[in-house]
Image (cartoon, rainbow, N blue to C red; front, side, top):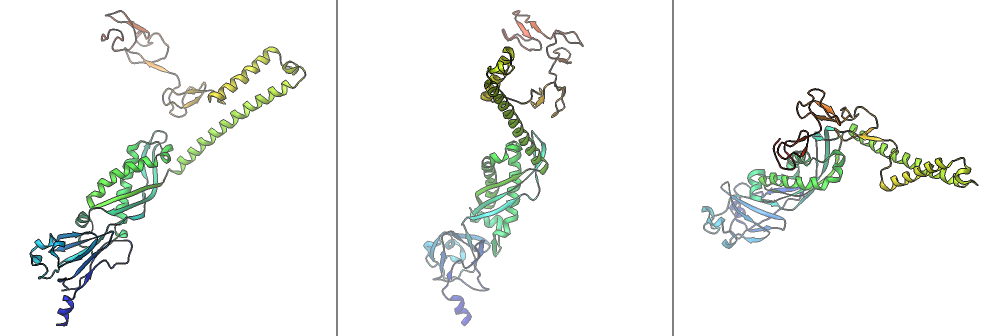
Length: 374
């Protein structure tokens, strides 16, 4: 008799778990314990309550206090067989509480390097880490796909699984973005926005909403970072040498002008004086235009790298620095500027259009004047 009365005693059903990292918590109904008429359900802000009857979802309650004897509060449950008499028959199913708050500052990081193809360094490995925040977006979907009949689900239970989804998605986004390795740090926001869109597609499948995603660092291999540092040092050194040379020229001009005879008195003739003046003027012009350089350079016709003037081969791609063109007739590589192909003798200059007689560049497929196919 005492046990029966205990089971029938009015009770308050509410979240009683103190762990702030709990996502889902099952209300602990003891064996044969029944929720009878006059029981109260309390759902706080940032929570939802799910009632499971005979293994199926019966109803979802949002924030509020519910008198479970009031059928107006439970429109779906009252349609079930065991509830159709408005609690005259006790409820013996399961009650789950789901926290819908935002779980913030969760860490993600690449356990293995992410491979990316870079135009400057080829295939390189990138590591990264950051933080993310999430919340339960669709409780019913989360129950079906994520926690099922678990008595409790915490952030620790899903942390590794979520990290794998994030790192895998970020790997694809970085590869698709085609951002140069040297510029990765400048495009964190752009990469993050792209990743959030793709991540949400994945997390929607399990009823989770990604609230925030942050990239704190994307690090390159040590050898690539050393190469970047070297390039920066060379650029600083070139700038310093350029400024030093120009400053020395200016100081020399000042010293010469202080002599009683001016430039001539300093042993500088008219011609030499004009030469120095030209050097000075050219130096100042190059400063204004930002084109001054310590050493003359050529541009590689293949990869665009700056190469020391007079070099026969590019140190970056190894291709010849001599510009060539293909013979339109036999395809032989011929030095640019040549008038005839050394292999077949074909003219490399202009040809006449057979229709309108206009001069057409050798190798052209159509006449630019009349459109005739050549």
